Length: 468
Image 1: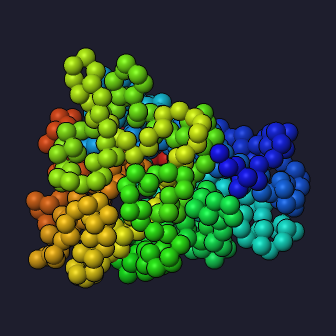
Image 2 (image 1 turned 90 degrees about the vertical axis):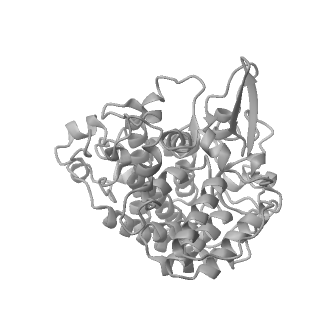
């Protein structure tokens, strides 16, 4: 595996930087901040400053966590994508949508995301008065802004209103209450705009399709999604168009190439730092003689159209006389050779973002063109056109469901933000419409996960979500 792109350092330097910027249990209550004198030394040294940023990627990928697999499979079982042949105690509350405030997995996700945010904030603060060259300071600051936005995107979509922490001050953070969702999106957008301006397009010379650290186009890709979720349709279309027309990225004609490390449609991938190629491959592909940990829900299998090439992203195994289907976007369930990286952002989503933005601006012809890019790559007949916005949204949801299944929680977030089809014009969440039909314990309050009870007990300013 080519790790030169990360400019990794000897172990003693890595360890020293990790001690400086990583060791916090929680961001909302992170413990004693790093020594400022030591921090100044880090952020005025090219090598140590680079390693501080690389350390954020390393922490994300060194074990399975929210940004390395967990959000993918937890949101998939929370929605209508995956289930389990043998329901495991750890996952049952997600399958049945009966999470409690004391759920240890929810607590771990909250803690990990806020710990990563602390690292991002430390880098941003440390580089503001740094003596590094403008090019290095801009690059590293831009990556930290991007990664902060990425973490907040998942926090706000899982928990709703969360504390918006943009500093490392312990006393202020420990008393921080929850922030309105629109303000969190404003911060996400601001961070990504900063990242756009600070970052450049860069790539590995020997492997030009490896994009394993955030660049300006990664910021544009996540910005397009943030605008979409905020319903700023014109801005979403503009950001997605910037990616599509950049010509740095292209849809892979062969769906089997999409999730490889040298995929031409990869905008951002995270480099493996475990013994596995990817958390998804290691988790979804069953071990010999065992059933898959997660199997694809029958409703998702039935949603594939005949001759859809994306059916190659599904595999099956037989166990005790029963056939189980499981996600097969990633085809390696062990280590070397490292041919698959953790796909974070890819071009196909940008076509889907632009299609949705165009639908909402009544450009149904333009939306059909974008959806047909995805359908044609998948071996399906193009859509001739749409008779209404409602018909176009049905087609969009179908393409998003198939293209992005078992990938970073997209289906769950779509169900949460889309309008129910049976009552167009009278907003009811699509999640209520879909999940109430086959999840007996489904309640609308499950649209947001609980704020971890330990956090609420530590900080009276944190108000629990309804239903918990």
